[in-house]
Image (tube, rainbow, N blue to C red):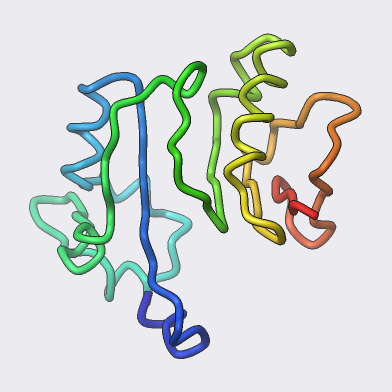
Length: 146
């Protein structure tokens, strides 16, 4: 956050995370990760954003405080807010059948601000003939709303 803030001083970061499973939300709220989960995180980010204790890394409170948690099933319940960035990884475009993928994608697209990004897993793809979102050629898994 402190790296981004000087570039966008007028912006405020708000993070909403959702899951249908309350157990997973409780796990996410702890924001604790084994070292192996952070192997691709740059060392300076790890040092400035996490506190290491007993071999685990916990996201620093200053970042945890930016996150709101919401129990919701994305198949039937999307938030009312609009977003500049939606991260939807390793669920919708991996495990849902194509009609459900299209349904959820339509709901997410409605919530994505113009110029906003939808990020999916790098091994996932959007359903064929998806409209309104174009791939970002510089970043695998990023799609931009027109």
